[in-house]
Image 1 (cartoon, rainbow, N blue to C red):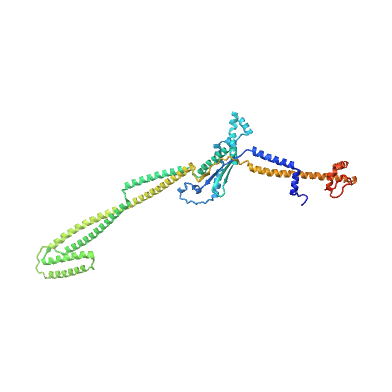
Image 2 (cartoon, helix red, strand yellow):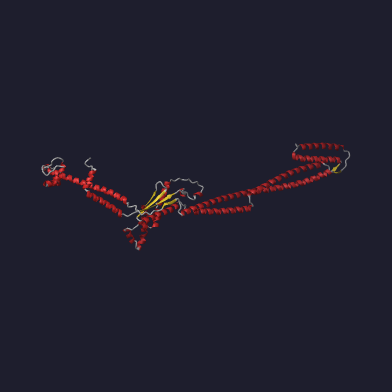
Length: 536
């Protein structure tokens, strides 16, 4: 062990030699510790816990976003980020200003100092109050907010979804009141921050405007249908198409009948040309009438079935045979009798009837054609009207959808606004503000423990320092004695006079100094004087 090191036993010896000094230092520090615990102002802590749940605030979407057709992107936020946001909102300057207004500036600042009382006396003057009172009050307000910010702590509780609010004050009831005010204002501000201001009025205004447009469009559609005479477009279109189809069918029948009549008239006219107005021979006339009937039948069948039809070919063969016989009979006749021809008269009467039928068919065909043109025009007008009605119905449908969407979003916005006004959000009070009668400052047990440790440390340090000082003094006196024993001519010139004078004093009183310093010379004899003792 080196000379500078101190063992445990050496330390106990030092403490024993300076036991009074050690006890004095220990008692002094403990007295200061006890006095600090007694006289320091006590601080009581009130705390509250806020639970951040999952709710509509996590989406962070505005209530008017659904009114647009824009697609929204869901941004996932971590719970830590949300807890930090809530903590920052709780400890915002505006929130604490509202708390100061609710609690009171004087209660936050506590007792007035001498400077504050002097200011109050100065500003009691009316002139000074008018000139400087606003700024003075503003200073108190700012100081109260700053003090509240300094004494309030907002922390995220680890491994939970809660945020803790802590406030220390000398009055436990005031501490709880302040924490309650902070929590209540934080709930209101959190709900208001996630509420779209003016969204209810905007959406309700758009809903009313859309409702007015919808009613106007419905009235215009009703008026248009009344003016156009359209009740059911699909049924009227089907009726119109059916009438046009019927007219076209009638027109085709009339045209075909007219064509047949014309052919019959042409055949009758040809037959009249072949017939004589007077009968020369009755048999020949009868044969000629039969031939005429066959020709009429052949014309009728040809117009319906064509010349390739078997019956038409058969009738044509009969006509050829009858014409051949008629020609042979005409050549054999020698005497002719002139009588009015009945066949001619019948054919002429039939021709007159057919011509009347032809005229009636022509009139009917013209009338049907005119009706068909009118019906087609009506169908075109119906189509145009149906297009206009369809356009207006689509407009009404679109306005109806917008009106229903605005009504739905207006109700959602109203509910959100009511929730915001009622301070209902995903932020709830998990633990209300506590009333704690046990002070958090000063911590008596910790202060006493620190006082004991510090008193022992400084007491030991003081004893060690005193022992070191005594050792240096002892070495100095030992050096002076050594110099005093040397002859005068061997004393170095650089020895201070003080040492020389003290050495001379030691020579004058050798019996008083030598017993004290003899132990420093080891086993050697320093002087022949009988007063010098050997070391122990």
